[in-house]
Amino acid sequence: MPEIWFPNIGIKIYHLSRVLFSIGNFNIYWYGAIIGIGIVLATLLVLHEAERSGQKKEDYIDLASFGIIASVIGARLYYVIFSWDNYKTDLLKIFAIREGGLAIYGGVLTGIVCGIIFSKRRKIPFWLVADTVLPSVLLGQILGRWGNFFNREAFGGYTNGLFAMRYLKNQVANIAPSVLAHVITVNGTEYIQVQPTFLYESFPNLCLFIFLIILRKHKKFDGQIGTLYMIGYGIIRFFVEGLRTDQLKLFDTGIAVSQVVSIVLIIVGIAFYIILMKRSTKIAGAANENK
Image (cartoon, rainbow, N blue to C red; front, top):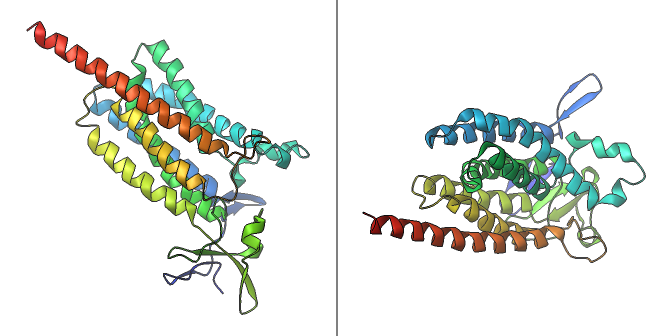
């Protein structure tokens, strides 16, 4: 029987290990490898864009040298803080990053703070830095969701829609009761059948990424790319998060913290898009008057 199954489109994956390879008793997981590949590709894309836009590549190498580490730590802390019950009795589990448990928004928010500090120290406009870096962050996010697929995590509730996905029940941890209520048995093998939210997020992110890559050659003002990333990703994540059964909750409120962050990201993105566009228009108008 397949380990992963998309029954309504006829795709069956008979074996897909979470472990890429092992060195003795030390396992290297696909999740960690995919995250690593995403970081490398994102960094290369940042350096390419810095060179294309006439900036110093060395500045962005320096940003990457501390920004990547800080963002990974931020992503882990965000996840641990909002799922503290899973770690409070075994604090060493906090450091088991290679097994999963990185929250994208924690990394994004930490990265923004790093970008602000970096731009002030190097005297580079923050929104120019955002335009240079954020499309690459999106590339990393796209790849990261496929890490969730390998890890059998970050999926939605039960569905029998076109893209319904089945995982072997005994290969999945922390299954929500609403999903367990619809366990499917095929020839004595139990499956959960769920929404493949990794796909629902990665595909729209890919579309947004392509749009931003095309737009950056025609952008009208610094910050146009960065603010559109904030708006676009915020919208995508808000709706996909609503489908997930493993939402990180805002402490005891029952509210999905990532949906709150998405709303804030959208509002801030729209506000700064308007502010920066008006400022650019005003500067352009003044320049034309002085001709």
